Image 1 (spheres, rainbow, N blue to C red):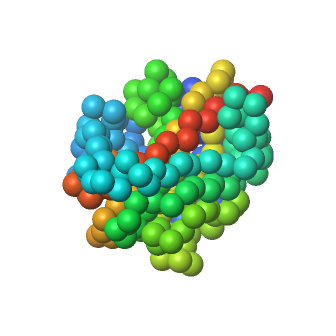
Image 2: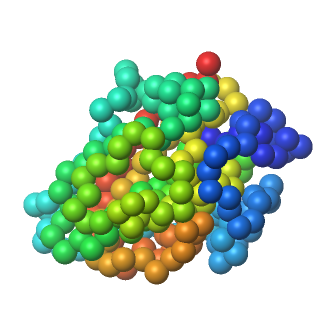
Length: 214
């Protein structure tokens, strides 16, 4: 979840990330419409559905991570209590016709505290032949393979690890197989990305993980 970005509103959410590419604007305590490139509230984000194609029935792809512990718990290393680096991810073959992949990591449990689903990572235009993301993804606007990083709810353009104020939270990694590249710049928020993906999703898969702050 988030760090102490809004101390007057969200006590103990977490500390500001360091070392990420700076975002064009600082985050606001009040959600703003997605066309202004801010973190959307759950009610602002449209529902995504996969395009109905024969490939979906015979070519599902799944998302996993080799480092998850019991109950799919994210190790401390990948959280704000550790080194706050991205965990490694792997997945199977996407459907035929996939032109790019997109990844969104979110904390739905944050809604009870912050009023929004907290976005931890936005990454899109991954090459269709990509089958994994290594540990400690670079904290840059774009990656070496041409992938583009969007803005998370911490206001940073990179991965932001779990950092709940207390208790156990769920962290959902959503991977989308798309039939096109997305025309969007680095710093694009998940809400804007969701709108741009509409009508282009061939398949999607989720990995639900957890983390408990120590």
